[in-house]
Amino acid sequence: MRTRVAARMVVFLCLIPLLSGALKPARCQATAEEYQIKAAFLYHFAQFAEWPAGALNAADRSLNLCILDGNPHLPELRNAIEGKPIGSRVFHVRQLSPAQDIQGCHILFLSRDEARRQSAMLKSLRGLPVLTVGETANFLTDGGMIRFHLKDNKIRFDINLGAADLSHLKISSRLLLLATSVNLGNGTAGGR
Image (cartoon, rainbow, N blue to C red):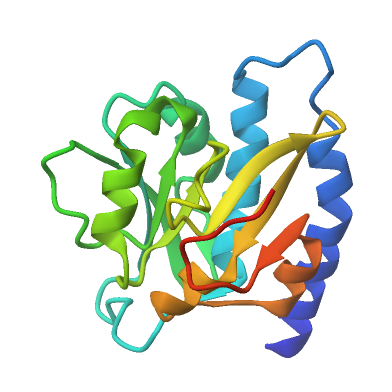
């Protein structure tokens, strides 16, 4: 088991420069390629996060990434990661309507298209074992856990460890080492 995790980490470490360097400077707008890369990151975030006892259904071997209804990047995310194995579980992408319950979601991805409802969504999830990942500049200060951003035209990420701790999620130290910045605060103050 430990050897498998170490092997995954080596592969992940090798893929980060390749994946994050795939964006060209001229591509500042969201592209299918950008969201395929972010899907790969989301998959690896799931591998290096640990949910508290009882947060994952023992009978259902799914690990669910939830995306709000109407997200234009759903096809890229679904095509890249739907059905992939994560340990003894299977990664699934679920589309949620705004009125739908978050029950059964393990990861929530809020793209910049959900900026209007981001703060309310994150506030409603505070303390729940849902790994939140987003893209807006104020995602971490709103209480999100992992924020994608571009640095030197490469996809990077920051981590709000305080927000993860409030939700009883453990993020692997190996993933923390790869982050551009890690906030150890109370879950509402963020990185750069």
